Length: 69
Image 1 (cartoon, rainbow, N blue to C red):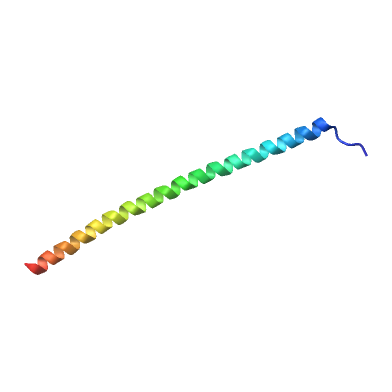
Image 2 (cartoon, one colour):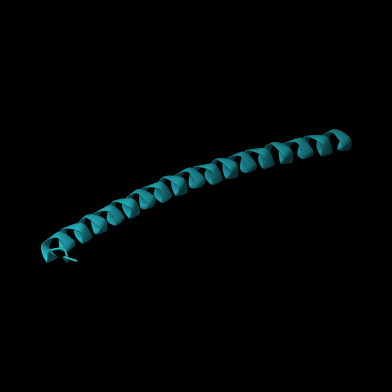
């Protein structure tokens, strides 16, 4: 049985390493995109909660003022 030349083995290993690096880069880009989407959802939810809280406080204040007068 003949063994493969060293340069062939090195080239194959280099190709495998390059493929792994590309896969890791793709995964990292997906994670960054997912994080941005999650951050945007959290920000939107926070803004809606603040606006809802302000509206609710104004409604309660209005009801109290109606009961006093």
